[in-house]
Amino acid sequence: MAFERVGVVGLGTMGAGIAEVFARAGLRVIGVEADAEALARGRGHLERSTGRAADKGRLTAQERAEILGRVTLTTAREDLRDADLVVEAIPEILDYKISLFRDLDRICKPETVLATNTSSLSVTAVAAATGRPGRVVGLHFFNPAPVMRLVEVVSTVVSEPAVVRDVTELAGRLGKTAVSVGDRAGFVVNRLLLPYLNHAAVLMEQGVAGRDDIDLAMKQGVGLPMGPFTLLDLIGLDTAYEVMGVLFDETRDRRHAPAPLLRELVTAGLLGRKSGRGFYGEEQARSCAPGRSGVISFDVAGQGAQELARRLAAAGFKQVSEGADVVLRLADRPVVEHAVRLPDPATMVGVHLVGDRVAELAATVLTSGDAARAATDLMKVAGLTPVACKDRAGFVVDALLLPYLNDAVRMYDSGYASIGDIDAAMRLGCGYPAGPFEMLESLGLARVRDGLRALYAEYREPAFAPAPLLDQLVTAGASEFPRR
Image 1: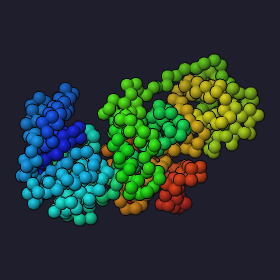
Image 2: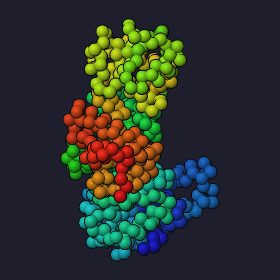
Image 3: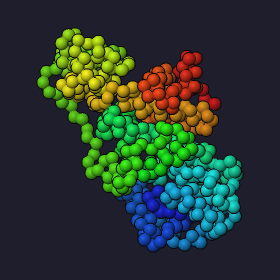
Image 4: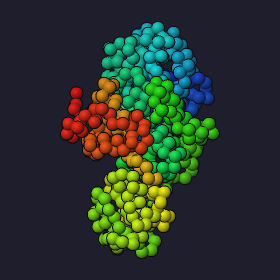
C-alpha cells in the first residue's frame, strides 16, 4: 500500500514529533487534537522543533516552511476520512485508545491502516475493538521522534502480513530503522530498559548507593548517554510507573513491580522534567573533582591490584603492608569476608574498577569513616571517579547491568527477537554505545554468568539466575552467541 496522506491524533511532544517525521519525508499530514487550545500547543511544538533544526543548520528556511506547509491541523476527526494511515499518540490509557480506535474505524475508509504509538499497552486489545483487526499495528516511535532512528513495528496474531510489510517499508522511507516484534508488554526496548531503571530506584531506596553516585557509575563507568535517574526524569516518572505496572500484570515477576519510591513520587506529582521536579530538581548531578586531603598510606590486594597500586604510587602515595590508613580490596566476594581477616577490619574498603574512569567503593559495616574518606581521596588522585556504595553483590554497576543483559538473553532465547534486532533496538532507541549482546561478548560470557550467580546467591531473585542459554554457552567454552 502506498502511504501518501497520514493522520496523527494527539499532538503532544511525541505526536507533534511524529507528524514532523512524516512531513519531513514528503507526506501530507493531518494533525488532530481535542480542542483549539491543545491544537495551538501542538502547532507550537512543531514550530519550535523545526525552528531549532533551522537554527542548527539542519534545515533551510525554505525546507522548514515546506515541512510546516505539509501539515494541516484540525480538531475534527472526520478530516481523517481519506487518510491512508492514522497514528494515535494520545495518553497511555487503554480505554481512551480503544474509544479512539472505534471512532477511527467508523470514520476512515476500509483500507486505511490504523497504528498505535503505545509503548506498553496491548496492541491486540486495541485491534480487537475495531472491525479491521488485521489492519491495526503498533508503530512505536522514540522521543524525540525527528532525531531517534528506531521504530518498533508491532504485529498481533491477526495482523495481515502485507500490512506489517508495508508499514515496515514506510519506516525505511522515513529514514528509520524498523524492528519488527510481536505484541508483548514493553516490546523490545521498554521490556529491557524499564526494569533496569526500576531496579536503580530500588537500589537507591534500599540505600545501596545514592542518586548521583548511581547516575555517575552508569554514565561514566558503562558509557551510557545518561544515568538511570536522569533518564527517568526525561521519560517521565508517571510513564515509567505505568509501563512497569503493565509489565508486572503480564509477567507477575516481582522484579517488574514498580518501585515504591516511584509510586510515592508520582503520587506527589513529581514526574520529572514535565513537572519541573522528579529525582532531580533545578540542580544537576554533581561531578567529582579530583582532590586529596593529607598524606594517606595504603595497601591494595586482589585481581588488578598492581595497576591501581602503580597509579597511586605515581601520585606520591606510599604502599605499606602493615598499618595502612586504608586497605583497598579489589573484591571477588563480599568485602566483609576479607575485612574480618585483617588486624584492623575498619581500614578495609572494597574497590570495583568500572572501565578506566570509575571506581566503586564498597564500605562494610566495619569500615570507619576515615578509611572511607581516604579511599575516596585516593581514587580521585588516581584519576578515577569514586562511587560510594554498600557491600552488596554487584555493587552498583553489575547489580544494574548484569540483570539487563540476562533479560536480553532470555528475550532472544524465547524467540521474540533476533540478536541483531535487540542490539539495534537498544543502540538506536536508547542511544546506548553498544547493544546487550555486544556488551555481553565484550565483558566475557563467563564473567557475566558468574556475576549473575553472585547476585542470585545474595538476593535469591529468580530473574538474577543466569539464563540457561548463557550457562550452557559458558559450560561449552563459547565466547559469543550463535546467530540464527
